[in-house]
Figure 1: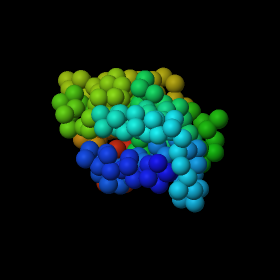
Figure 2: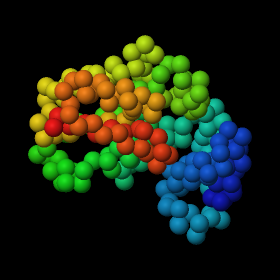
Figure 3: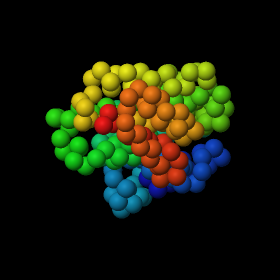
Figure 4: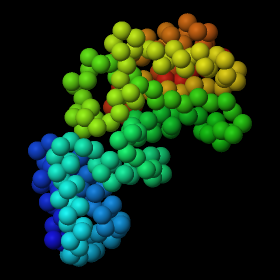
Length: 217
């Protein structure tokens, strides 16, 4: 089996449960991990034959992918903000939306991070009642405690962040948090009720209210 044949096999075998673009991305991530080659070099060496160990790993990986296990848990790698991190089933896989939250930070503040009090958080905010609407590769593998909140107390972590900010945040500092797209106004009202004067909701690339910036002044 060559590098190119292996890539095509991965895509073919997981297309029943993943959209075309996602299946392609998963195959590229897996092949990069297996071959330790960048995409361009894999194209140049596409007829290179894989070792028996590599072929066995691909076979096992496809079986795990077909059981909805995230590819990041198979490779133990995830990219976030241009950096590669080790990940396993004990941690939440970094999301593109969270990268957008980082980008939301004022450029000037990013330059002054060592000197500016700043709180950035992606707390659990998915309601238990919404669990059935999520993909199995998330609900079956990623840690529930990092994802879900009780339906009767959905703002519990935002309440804790607001209290922590009132105690620790510099008066010119800011809080940036990722939020449930359906709870934007509730989160805004919570921070307003705790003496925060500036609360700005921001939409992500999908047009959903998923980020919020809060300031004491």
